[in-house]
Image 1: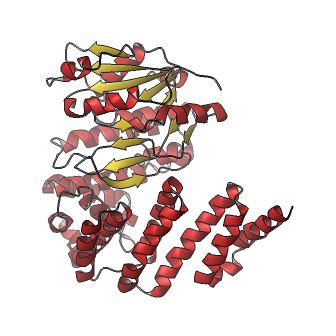
Image 2: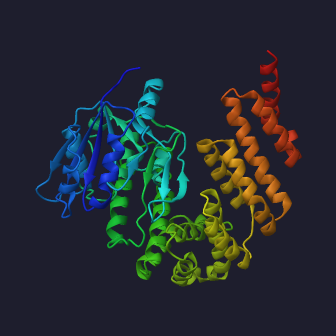
Length: 465
């Protein structure tokens, strides 16, 4: 195994309270061949004092005379780096101790990959408890990038040559839009993205923070998208998705505007999204309502019921019919908060949220079950089958009261089949047979699933020989 130098770039501006955790998480890495470049972007807080406490020769400390913005701070770090790989870390996030080691090993095993990223833990407002485990796709391409943010800057490590080839970060983007623009340019240049499938960093959520200039954020996002779609290297099949991609971002920002009581802006973006993609109003729940629910439960310190009432009451007049679904949306939000609390072992929170879900007559449907199954799969990948089984066993009795036994059996069987396929890929054939047998017991229709039967028979034959 080779031991390339990794340069970690931390831009610092008004996050001295958390900066020490970020720095310590780098200095405590199990992979030792790195340099840490910390760029103070003329921060008015006590960043200097925090950095001086460490006195570590592996830290290169650079101070901007004036505030130049996030992109410029990252570029300063890159220009002053010597690493074969560039790792990004925001000053209020922090790494798992194996972050660098895991990525270096992955690059070694996959020399065709240029950019790696990993799952992460999203922390609650307390920064001590986990809100959720975010697991991005195993690989992403330009299609994934234009629709949102499958991974964040702190998740990434990039080959130096790729960073320089696309001319680093565009300094037009002072503090928003830079990652969307940067990643799309990497994809347009033909660089390959892949996931190191292990949660290797932690991102804090800061409760109560609001965005002062939403329109500026949206305009930066739209500029990055326009730049991507107008690039001659952008494939025709991606260009055909421009309206859908722009609409997806409008929907997200309309939800944020409504949550912040910016009615006029929220309605403007909501109407723009629906005009570009009327399909947002199809389905139950439709994508607009689903987005409002998702944003209402981001901050565990706030009451999602109040946020949903606030947001739905501000919808454009032609969408006020959605007010009839307010109780349903509140119940669904309570249900998701209950699931999170069970998964992350917050028993009292689980009791409170389940009681609220039950009182709102929250319902179990296939959309919810599919999303829940994916979350349990992700949990099992990270912590093992026993941990995932614990979560399922805790959820089953309460979910049965909201749905029916058939729904719960579907959830269990779906998880077991996914586990069987992962086990088959890993060569753990005994686990394949056990999981499929249990899945069929819960859902006999899997007896007629050709893929399931194929891996079951193949695992039997592999063990026999």
